[in-house]
Length: 198
Ligand code: URA
Image (cartoon, rainbow, N blue to C red):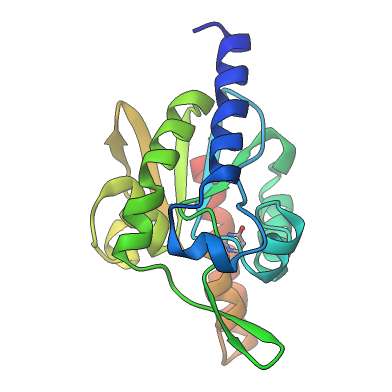
């Protein structure tokens, strides 16, 4: 496929994702959130699923986790616009409690439903390397339930492409305790981004 044909195929896939209503999550969500970014990037980031703000905006990583990711990318000297950013699951999964929509972790069925979209998205975008952010993305890409702790720091090949794994930025948002510990965890995340983008 020429780059122009790939760009057209990716736009068609993104439209297919927007029109997908076969998942039970689609009915409750505002809209599907496909990935965004250039073709053939050095790095593709794969998160878990859109959150509340992403669901409303229709764009990945624009809420609190996205702002933290942006800060980490800036610290790593990586321009976000040079990356392709997407999610393993394309609709926000939540429970409504009063006016709040509380995030719910996708289950194996959700991951399996969206996996074919993700596999096609990766093939069409053709990143040099993929970085899975958190357990859901790791499970979707590697088809493994191994812990983040055991996968972090290593590199695996999936369809001939290097895949690395790190934490999800929302893990850093949830961290309590000493500021020094939180700073050390943030610095480790920045190092993972730097290594993946090398
Ligand atoms: N968390 C994710 O995994 N993806 C987003 O797009 C936002 C928050």
